[in-house]
Image 1 (tube, rainbow, N blue to C red):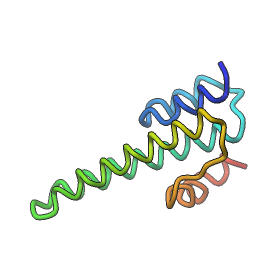
Image 2: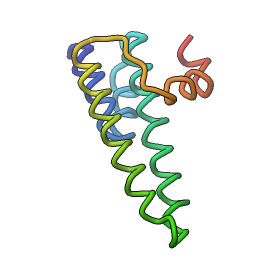
Image 3: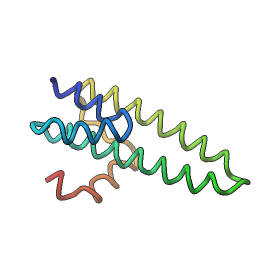
Image 4: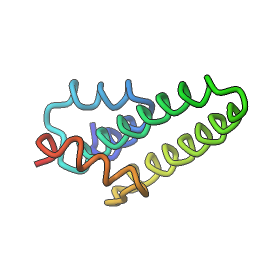
Length: 104
């Protein structure tokens, strides 16, 4: 399977990212970064959604944040398919900090 398809699959929720990392052992550095970036993106969306969902007054901010995460995932999918070295705003810095060893 081509690397651009693997990068695209990596942005299909965290399950796609884990499948990309585990099933395809010959991933290049860009595909690994896309998968780890997707894990950070969907993980943060889940955590923020749960936290904001418990607070009735700002519950609707969870929906806005979720929509933003979906938009960022779609942008990531398109950039990965076009084989561009694109880093999502804010997410890429966290990804490099969290998965430093795996990306080296």
